[in-house]
Image 1 (cartoon, rainbow, N blue to C red):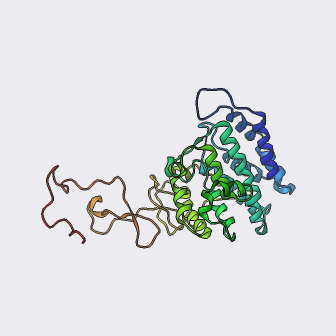
Image 2: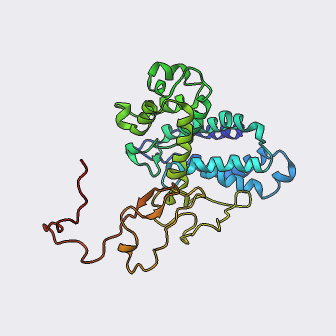
Image 3: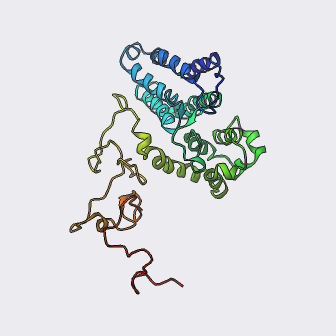
Length: 333
């Protein structure tokens, strides 16, 4: 796989960015993408050393995940959904026996990290548009998993703590050794201004969380909600014979695949967000879903608000009219 990624980097070296007025989306990226598309199946056959596997349909499925992990050639963008496709590729290679359990650590630290470095070069060379970025309120414009795996890598470290990643001297010292430090350093190279302004989520995590294992576990929960639990991202994810979709029979589905059409709210442990059915006797949606209810979050005793539901006609007082005395809860002292 490292040879495959090196080959793709060779395509980048052979394809300089075009001179154009647009800041984002250099169209030379489409040339690189076309080269990957033309050679992906053959590249995957080389990874599948076993002749039986190489000549089967597995190479085609793997090639699809490889291609989609490069970004989108039409929009010239890249995001966490494309990153997830590369993880799907690694999982499929494990299913086929290319990687075994004892290879997991080296698969992440060598293969996945090589992919991350490749995509950073592509992002900075062709100025790919961040796909679905939340601006400063996202963890990162392009990737998520380097922070999750990077935190796991630092769990056994005796001296480095999350707040040390805010120090330039620490990042420069450990940039080549730890994925988390490398990810933070790349943000500093790509963005200007105070870190707490352009990356407030990461800043708060590094400033407020004291232990790496807590960062790691929190990142996994966040990944499930913000990536796997978002319909706009996962609606593009592909399933096949190696990684197939099995609906959870215990969860109500919306008919839109894995998630509800709006993708509102955190996900259940099963990875599916669902609406709770209206209580018996409810005659309109306003009374069926009081504020604070309506979407199952998967966390005991906690619910997300149902977005976009108006109260029933006549339930709100006219503009400028205060509600009757006694209808508001007493103020806490």
